[in-house]
Structure formats: structure tokens, C-alpha cells
Length: 334
Ligand SMILES: Cc1cc2nc3c(=O)[nH]c(=O)nc-3n(C[C@H](O)[C@H](O)[C@H](O)COP(=O)(O)O)c2cc1C
Image 1 (cartoon, protein in one colour):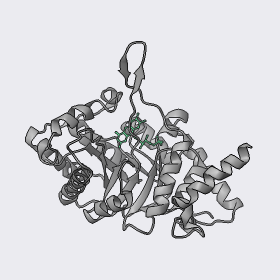
Image 2 (cartoon, rainbow, N blue to C red; image 1 turned 90 degrees about the vertical axis):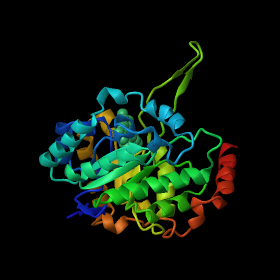
Image 3 (cartoon, rainbow, N blue to C red; image 1 turned 135 degrees about the vertical axis):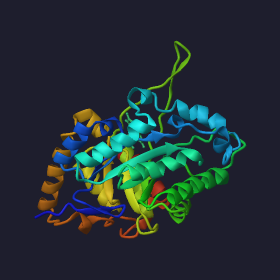
Image 4 (cartoon, rainbow, N blue to C red; image 1 turned 45 degrees about the horizontal axis):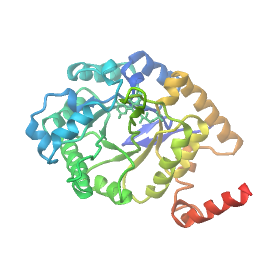
């Protein structure tokens, strides 16, 4: 009997497969189908700071040019308006999903600044969410704002959300920090119970004929997993928080890699948008088959087995390996 169980944000999950925040998580039927296909938990799509009534001074509290970033933030999910729920509908949705499924339901807040909107964390908790994911999506374009101010803003926001709720809080963040490991520790010290690595930043393209910046959102490819694997492997055992992989998880081997690197869960959105929610069942079955063939009896057995602390060659995750990799390519190419 294969045990797919894992623990994430204080909850025992029957499987490490998690549906991450996205359009499917707005649909109660899709969430029910995900539960039938073996999902361990579901993250609802985010309630955005911009959707809530905010006082401008709240926005300015941590960022000198808060309104500039706000305007930018407004446009970063091009398809957002199409399916976003307003605040009241969002809270109703949390309650409806909770009533519909038995797996843990994780609410999601998406923003950049502390302020009145953070109180929605408590309302999401009251609506029944089992945990909260805080997606901090911030593009620091202002040359006057330095890295330490940005990091402080993240930590302050996490502290404020943490103070607002009793349920576990995970922080979803991007990879663009100069000292990722230190930032991870600071966020955990500020109260994060989990880190979700990494946000996929929407990247605008340029239309050279029409001289326009074209917003488009591409689904991920499995190549994107590597960045996540490296940082999960580096952080596993070094931060006192659960780690989640999001970005590039498409099949069972991607899930295995995430677990071995040290993640508690592997999240999926693009793969489910591309193949349908039923894909979760196929991934779960392939996971079980692989584990049987390789004589694993549980997910826990493999978690962290290839983290930086566990592998024979820790430098493989660092610069030391860089030159060797470049050389190996040159030799092959000849
Ligand atoms: C259409 C779409 C909508 C999304 N909406 C949200 C959202 O509301 N909140 C959030 O934190 N992430 C959102 N995401 C990001 C996903 O949760 C996920 O982190 C990202 O797509 C990377 O995982 P993937 O490779 O499995 O797609 C969205 C992604 C897509 C494609």
C-alpha cells in the first residue's frame, strides 16, 4: 500500500498534489473534480489588493512611490478581470468550496502593501479557509527604492497578515532577490508557516509592427521547474517552514523531483488548464506506479532525499558546478 500522505501548513494531506491559485479554483465543480482525482488541497484564486477599497495613505505606508507600483500592479494579470470575484463574492466562494469538499481549502490574498485590506485575511479565515496564501507580487521599478526597503516591505506585510489570523500563512514570492535564503528566513521570522516558490511573473512582449506592449499570459513549461527545485533543495532543512513548489510541475516525475528536493507539496495550474482537472488522476496514478516500481512505500520517505543537505555533492546546487557544466557541454559539442 503506497502512502501518498504529506503535511502542509499544519494539515495532513492525503496527497502532495495541490491545485494552485488560478481560474479553475474559481469553479466549485472543478474543485470537486480535483478532489475526486486525488488532489491533496486546493488554493483558491487570489483576492487582489486592488479589488478592495484602499486608502492611498495605506499604500504609501511602506513604499515611497506606492501609487506608481499600484498602477503597474493593476495590469499584471491580463486576463484577471475576466474571472475575478469581488470581495463579497470571494468570501461566499470560500464558504461554498469549504462546504463542497473535504480537502483543506487555502484562501489567497494578492498584494504589495500593508493597510486596511489586510483585514480581509481575517474575513477569509472566518469564511472557513484552512490556511492562507499571501502572494506578494511586486515589481520594484523605482530606482529610489533599494533592495532592503523591498525586503522590509515583504516582512512587514507578512507580519501584518500573520497578526490578523490564527490559521497558517504561506507566502508566495518571486525568485528575484539578491539573497534568497536570507529573505526566506526573514519571512519565516515574520510569521510565515510556508513558502511557495515561485511566483511566475507575467512578462509583457513587444509588438514591433504596432509598437505596442502586448500583454499575454503563457502557460508554464516543465523547464521552469529547475529554478524551483534548486531553491527548494537549498532551503529544505534551513528554514522552519513548509516548502511548496509552484511553476513547471506537469507530470509525476516533476512531483517526485519536488518531493526529493524537499517540498511538502507540488502545485499545478498550467498542466490542469492544458489537460483538464482529470490530469491530476493521471499524475497520481503515475506517481503510485513509479513508487511501486522503485520500492518506495511513502512520499515522506523521499522528501528531502535530494536536498542540498542530503546529497553527496552539495556544490551541485552552487557556483562550483557551473564551470564543470559549461565544460561538459563544450566536450559534447565537439
Ligand atoms: C490564468 C492564471 C491565473 C492565475 N491566477 C493566480 C492568482 O489569482 N493568484 C496566484 O497566487 N497565482 C495565480 N496564478 C499562478 C498559479 O497559481 C501558479 O503559481 C503559476 O501558474 C505557476 O504554476 P504552473 O506552472 O503550475 O502553472 C495564475 C496562473 C494562471 C495561468
